[in-house]
Image (cartoon, rainbow, N blue to C red; front, side, top):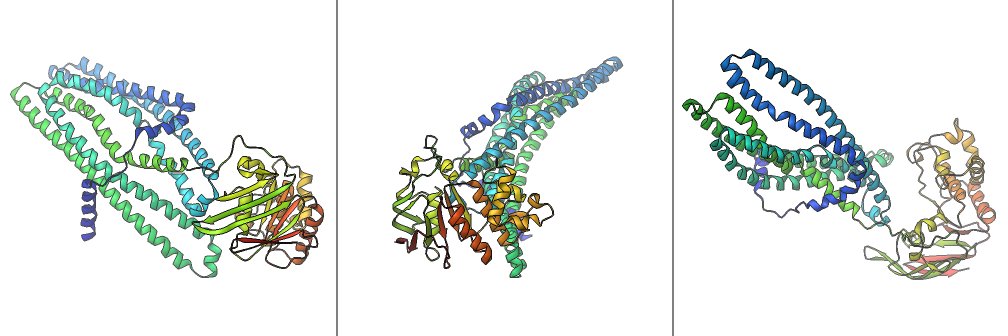
Amino acid sequence: MNQILKYFRDAVCLLSSKENIKKFKFSSLQRLIPYVKPHWKKGLFGSLFMIVLSFLALPSPYLMKLVIDKAFIAKDIYLLNIIIIILIGLQLINVLFTLLTEYHFNVFSQEIMLIIKKDLFYKILRLPLSFFDKNQTGYVLSRIGEVEGLSYFFSNTIVRILISFFEFVFCLTILFYLNWSLTIISLLILPIYLFAIKYCSRAIKKLTRESFEKGAIIYSQIQDSLSGVDVIKFFTAEKRETEKIHNHLDEMRAINIKRNITLTVAGQIIALLGSLTAFVILWKSGMDIIKGSFTIGSYIAFTAYLAKLYGPTQIFANIGLTFQPAVVALDRISELMDLAGEEENDQGINIKSIEHGVTFRNVFFSYDNKPVLANISFEIKRGEKIVLAGPNGSGKSTVVKLMLGLYKAQRGYVFFDGYNIARLSLSSLRDRISIVSQNTFLFNDTIKNNILYSRPNAKENEIEEVAKLSGAYEFIEQLDRKFETEIGERGVRLSGGEKQKISIARAILKDSDIIIFDEATSHLDHDSEKNIIRLIENKFQEKTCIIISHKPLEYSKIDKVIFLKNGVVSLSS
């Protein structure tokens, strides 16, 4: 009981809170205009059908007045039959146009949200690597899912609001015609509605944003747990992980309960105002009917048109309450869309090959004000075989990411063939660099498609050739479906060495100018490692190879060793 009282007390406090909440700016809707333009015809047809529906609903209350005041009292069966036929016809037409309206708005909404999801996904992929360093995959996925909240903007509700204003004028005219004194009483209640709506919507928006954020965090935690399910089982941590998720779910439950109760309280306040209005109208109408200055049919028609008069106000009430998820979704999606993307110079130089090499000159870089590279300088010439060595955390991976343009040097410069990397097209640069990482990532697809990922238009014989060169061909041929074998999420159906060989085949197929081996032989046996060494010394003789390794090397043709320690570089030949 105490918990129930607490939730209701919190709801009342939220409704009366004067906390400064960011106001929704209708200018934010301009972001949606480019998405609406290609599909405006479907929205227009849906709107036209809805306008017809609105007109079809207007005569019914007055026809009911005629039934009661004319047909019933005068016992006019002919008039009664005519009015019933008209009402049935209107209802049948109403059903038809309702179906047409819902179809067009449903297609209109789904097509627009599909494009927004595609653009948002592309935008997220174009964000700098630092964004993904700070945000978990599950959290990002949940943010993409929030696009569904925008469906409100593309539903018939917006058109309903516009139509309501015309209905308001029409109904107000009829109401004054039926009873001007009752109409004035009804209009005096409207400002109270607006006052209630203002305070209710503020609280709902705050709780909706909290709910969205907590949902994103939970999704992130679940995705993280599922990705590391093998580690969880190794350490028998199922219970611990479940409890961790349960704690977040409990917090989510509390937020949603508070939000739903606040919605209920706000809705009941508005419903109470409506009921009080109805009671006042009933009392005044009853007095007039008893005196003989008002008829029962007129009362029924008046209350029906009064409902339509209050329609715009009720819609605004719903906007203040149920509109908030759409507003919050638009705000949060706009936050992602407005993030600075990875710098891609449209006018940048497209390089077709790296003819001379790469140069680091006085480069500084730090993560969150923690220095990683301090004034490092070195040069790697075309065709050189370089070992990049150093203890863990010395900055080896950072050097690779700077070369790929994934990070930007905070001071100093990175040059390719004498061009500052800032002047180059990053996509053309990355086309000329391959990387084979210790942490091999393979897609949940076939072996063939994973190899093709580096060059989708490669031919069948090229795929087989690179598979042979990497040492993958032997185990692939032993599989039932060979190159068409599905390897599962992250290549779970393959061993570490098999995944590494496919990754190497993918890098060979790319035929780039610079190949980076980042602990690439860590999962390979001795014979497979010797095969990679032969590749570097023979197949990649004309290419620049950068080998990151912690263990002694058997490479006979090393041109230079770049040793990193404490952010400082030292060179040896």
